Picture 1 (cartoon, helix red, strand yellow):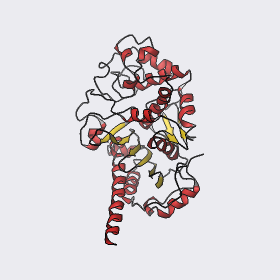
Picture 2 (cartoon, rainbow, N blue to C red; picture 1 turned 45 degrees about the vertical axis):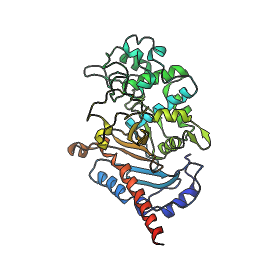
Picture 3 (cartoon, rainbow, N blue to C red; picture 1 turned 180 degrees about the horizontal axis):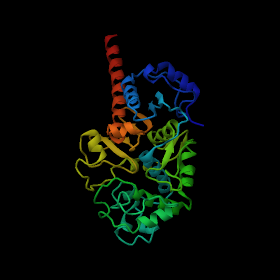
Picture 4 (cartoon, rainbow, N blue to C red; picture 1 turned 135 degrees about the horizontal axis):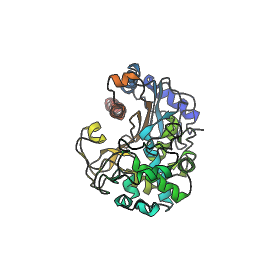
Length: 382
């Protein structure tokens, strides 16, 4: 069961422009949402961009959800996708993983500042000094991926995975360099398993998926027999992930129930790079947005755009495959672009989904601004 009541759907359809009119029965929203009409935003530029990617063969299908002020303003399916389409979301799962661990921090079973060695005493070198906070912000000093010539991280349990991460030499001292990757999150997940005495998938289902009615979302092996990859092994649907974003934008609340504390939400969205070196021109925020700032990452999420006070106003968790969830605080909205790049066309054209999807929140924001300006001008002439 999703949280999008049909009564709200009917009201939304009345106001949504033709560019986003393909809303299916049962579309989504939090119980706090009232069945009122919403402005008719023109999302034609963003839907046209998505359709162009599909027409070029980069995606077999895609889906888009935009929710502003807790009202669905766009739900659209493209190509072969429909509300039941389940897709591996790659690094968009990092946000889910960090939130799962945050529930244990809320219960004081873990601390963001717990060193690895507290839970994994076999980490006797400098890697053991890295904290949970650093593991989830890519500042731990761990290798980002298994090096060439070493068995890839495709073991049967997180215990076995961590056992093969432990002997790898660090690339830097904890807290000194930002290096985006996945291995450190495997260690963070194992710490969570030990703190809760449960396996990772059970933790996620109990603490995030079931409370948020994410019935089709799981951390499953990407390949048969491989362990759940905490940094990239989740699969989900459009509406499932929308429920997660609804909780985040509402400061940890969902359907009247608290899932995460406001303190946890603030920690996840805060600058957790904390002065670690960010290589110029190398990381996602600078390459996707053009501008440069050092506080690019929180816990499991990118801090794409900051306000004058250094607070994140655009937060995201993009994936190499195209899936792109975001929260836009400037416009009080959240959105999710669900897709998974496939086929020879993407390789032929050197299409990079990781750096292409970030255009979507910009186009959505422009549509919102255009409607606001139009409404203001109309009032001024009356």
